[in-house]
Length: 148
View 1 (cartoon, rainbow, N blue to C red):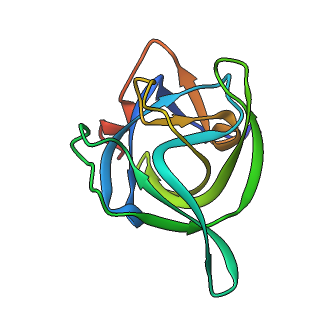
View 2 (view 1 turned 180 degrees about the vertical axis):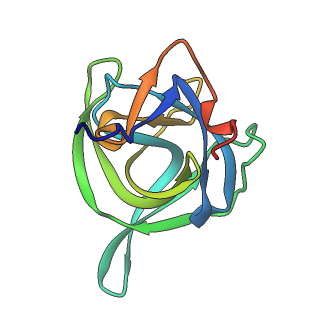
């Protein structure tokens, strides 16, 4: 007997929520060519909180409808070397946060970087997608359809 495939089909663009940041309906580019996922932020600063390494940052840009000038902070999961889209290697802070995606809460590992030159503030890479989702590049915003 063959087990039914439980992977959800998603499109090349999707909407996600970051409940820990009180941000909803953020556009994300699904990128199977990228290993890690990344989140647009600026004014990154490493800080200490209760003796642990944290990163403080401001999400998005002032022109974005969800922008708030308030800084956010999160524990640093890792500092990772990442090859950017222009081929340069950068060291980036990596955090773990909860996202609401396709009707469920997931934990995602995100590198924090300035994506102001990119069209979408969030990039979802294959580390998150693997074994959970299939990507249909001819579609977009499938997470907004009825999930029942």
